[in-house]
Amino acid sequence: MITNSPRMLITDDDRDVREMLGSIFEPRGFETLLARDGQEALDIVQHERVHLVLIDMHMPRMNGLEMIRQVKLTHAAMPCILISAAIDERLAEEARQARVFSQLAKPIRLSDVTETVGAAMRQTYGWPV
Image 1 (cartoon, one colour):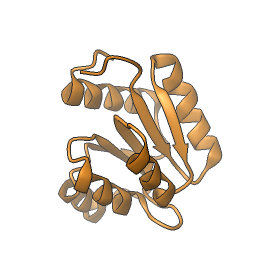
Image 2: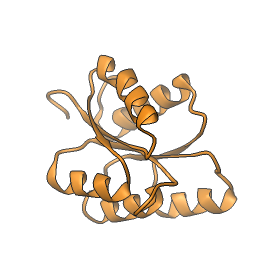
Image 3: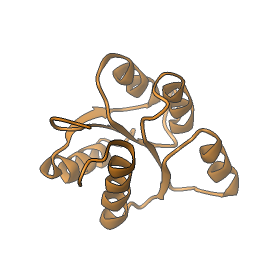
Image 4: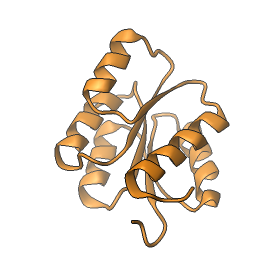
């Protein structure tokens, strides 16, 4: 159970997307951490308490799926939500194998992302979103 504000890591190489997602979730009670790419996100997860990862697939240095695979080695239960403009059957299967909580297509719809994050928080932590 989470006793104070849950921490969400938002990772996208597009600053506008990161900030837009942060502005959606901060008023909903989340503390948001922002990263520009998968490597920066992995560094944050290794040094900070994070409850949920929302990450873009296509980024420089380390893509979203590679980052999720690394996170799951030490934080197996942490829900990770993968975002991509190009979700196909191959990516969907790789995401399932990497134990991604869910996949969202770009452009992101507000209702889809808030419902998916809420479901992840309820299922993983029993947090009422």
